[in-house]
Image (cartoon, rainbow, N blue to C red; front, side):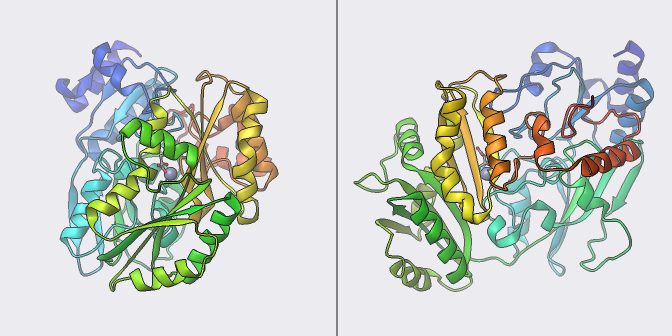
Length: 455
Ligand code: MLT
Ligand code: ZN
């Protein structure tokens, strides 16, 4: 990057918000897992949409590539400067700017954390329908850019289903804003829906308006044990059918539970070991416990059950599932292969994929957990080098063979670009490229993400 571009960026955001000290820029250049490590000569921290637009315009003019970054909680290398790009940090655009209790909506700057969105919603007598383990760090801008899923997709849908307004700076440098939040608004292309999940390749989200959902104050959390994956998957289907109050339905296995207990010092939920576990949470205006208990009674395959209604006990059960991420990370940078399977293939996939991984690399160790209510399995693989691709290749191909998606909720990022063609036709990829060329004509926005390299 030329000194003139650097100087212009400094003038836009102010010296204190143009970071070029290597020891600080380095902290923006590595992802949460440690698998993706890049480098950057500068981190720009604009304070409003106008400054973001000015930064994009200068970089477009100078042919300087940018990587937009929120809380840097992504898991596919989509938010780190792998090619030496300038990091465009949106964290200063933090704050809930408008809460409308009448409509059940709120607006917030891109740098607002999901936890702060959830707190603002609660303060207005509503709830936000997206929740995820990284809630304290993940930002609304990042979760919109990746169409983040999380723990309540089953009930409320992914982030795209919450988005009712957006403000963004396109790669052209133009600010586009449609923050009205009208539920019915058929006035042309759904630009917000397109930017959502575009992983910073078309525009930089600067603000979002989201719908809120009714509060469900009565909650019951349960961990159920099964002797086979098939029994757990069948029970998951029955729970979805019979329990409209169901909000989360998660899967983990004995090996993951053992790892979590070893790494956190927690005692296991049951005296005996089991093959598979479901964590089910029901939430409603009225106590869902009696209905839940009746449904559990009808599932003969349940081998053991732990039920909690008190917040501390519910949190204890959740930790068996949520602590998987950190416990696996502690083993060394994992390959995180987040995939969805069609329901009939789900149990087979869970049972077979460790062999697929082992055939690709005998040193690899597979850890499986995920959002079984959405058909979403997180295949985590440790014991292999960050840049080794044989395991990823085998798993991606196996997923596609079974009719699944190679990315359920984490996005394509840099990690899965080589396999996007398994889920998208040439015609679709060409359409993607044309959209990219129209909204980011200089190709400066996150150029190493999502679209497969050409040629
Ligand atoms: C989760 O479901 O816990 C998140 O997607 C993070 C992860 O996959 O590790
Ligand atoms: Zn997840």
